[in-house]
Length: 475
Image 1 (cartoon, helix red, strand yellow):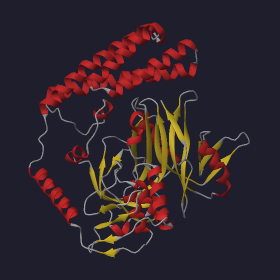
Image 2 (cartoon, helix red, strand yellow):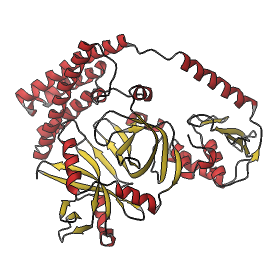
Image 3 (cartoon, rainbow, N blue to C red):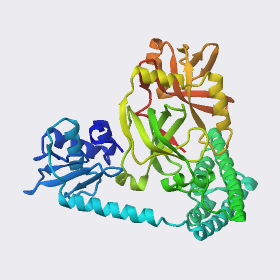
Image 4 (cartoon, rainbow, N blue to C red):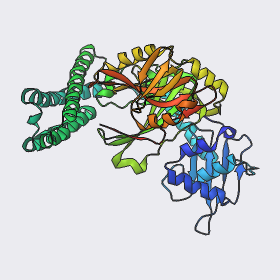
């Protein structure tokens, strides 16, 4: 949890529900709309009154005694924090004068209620419902049989089985998977159905290969899920465990579950190396994905802020971070390379200085070959994301006359993908004299090669991001 004097404008911006809320808050702060500014003696609370459209000003406060900080306001907004609370924090960051004052009685009472609620929850923690977990597994087992039925049709009759006449039947079958708690197989099946119909009308070899890949992915997911469920039901250990299959089947991890499994690291210093916005058409959602390096271990983690299309207005948008973040408790999802991580609170703990850049460079892979070997182990799994993110060392970046680029480290070379970040990299390649590149390594089946998609460059002095504004479509 950050202390009041540690917050920055970037931290406040990341707390905003959306860009509009932050912009409005910035306007309130710039126009000095707050009539009073107060801070408690222990600097755990800031509060004040902000002029609004009516005669009565709004009372806003931000309580830093809670983790994460609690924002309260008398305005009718349903956004938390609202623009008034954001503006109050921006005023504090800007160094405006805050008078020392006693904590208001109503906030003290609310603190007491939260404390009592927390004590009660700690005294009587909820017991895992093993009966419900077993029932859900059996229900999922029934749903997997429907997915197997679909795959049998595809494998016996080919992609042509998904013709316009059969589409409605298959879509109804896919819809049923939602009743069996299988959103991931359901998403893959829907993607196959939509793509197969397009191919039947407009034949395309590349799209046909993509459909085959989706079928392999669905088949693998079904086989592993059946084995996973059978093992858990036989052993009686029906609760989630340290296994990626739980999420592959559509399970959603809670932080409490990750803690119970011991999937935590304490006081972890992280630096964000890249930030990408995905349009995940397969799951009908947007994802803001941050790639972070653990300064203690060199592990490359990712954070994912998922916003389904239907709820995009109600979920706060994530943003880039350019400071070192110290996370008191980092929760890790089950998985291998580039594990997803989450946390409840993080405190900015300094700028990314040349010293920190040097530390990051020392954590890069020892060679391109070692990085590729690491990626291959991750990419060979049919259920992988199809890319592996690694930090590769380089001595030069060169581009040929045909505009194809290569990353060079001594005698080693790896081809660069022809993507927007690569085109940006070309503009600065001549000024780079070595460093490390955060990149996605992807396998191209048509050429049977692993290629490199650059995301950012780490030099002795700074981090150069190449794709923070890029929108990538996933399917």
